[in-house]
Amino acid sequence: MKKLYYLLSVLTIFLVTFISCEKDLIESEKVLNSQENSRVSGTFIIPELICTGEPSEFCFNAPKGTILQAKQWDDNTGDWVQVFHTAKSEYDLMCFSLQFDVAGDYPLRYQIGPGRFAQTTISVENCNDCEESFSYLKHRGGAYTFTYTPSENTRNALVVFTFAQSVAITGLDKTWSNNGQTMQKEMDLIACKTYNWTLKMTKDCNAGTPNNNVWTDFKVDNISKKNLDTPTPNIVYPCDEIILETN
Image 1: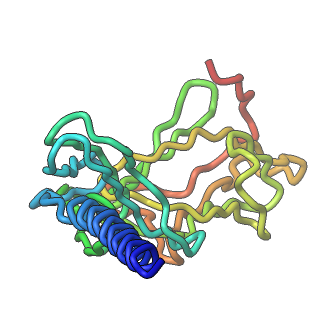
Image 2: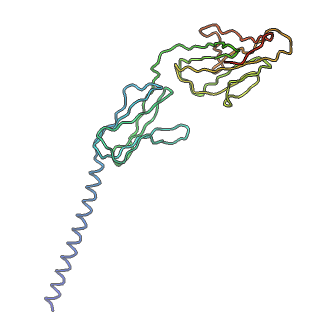
Image 3: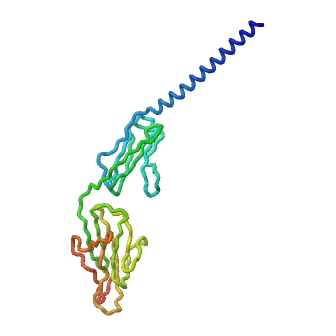
């Protein structure tokens, strides 16, 4: 009987030891795999020069089959916006493009393999060199095309056309608002980009004056661009002529 108890005791100790060792072995393999996956070597490549208005290529250099992500901070939403993601990269070098229309600093986050994101800040420059200009061109039929080219990027610039009293204006869409004798709109202006507005302006001629001003000024952020680089005098509506429709 004692021998039976002894054998059962030995067998129990053996089983407990075996199960404990097996459990430790399995847990060690899980940690090793986790550590193996987190030790992914790779780099995030940022262009040396990033210019406004031009696509710039960003690249991940990491082993094929790696999870890759990139996010850009959005001031409007106050959150990170995903701009690139792959759960399993197809090549060692994976690239994507971003375009920035306004110069400045932009935060980016990127992830190579599982784990935390790394964060960096990129600088975007205005690589164009141009002169600010403003002009207008009269078309047959009485319409005018106004052309403005800014030399710098400006966010939320207030663009203002000033007209004389009793002037009927066509050519500006509903995004423009009327304020007294002006039509106004906030715009993000991009350096060296040309902006055109074609307007038809007609004047109430009941006063009997043969010539009346219809347009008198163009401003950006309360700074007049009239006669900036070329003469742009007031535009006069000839009440003694019949204005034909623009061709």
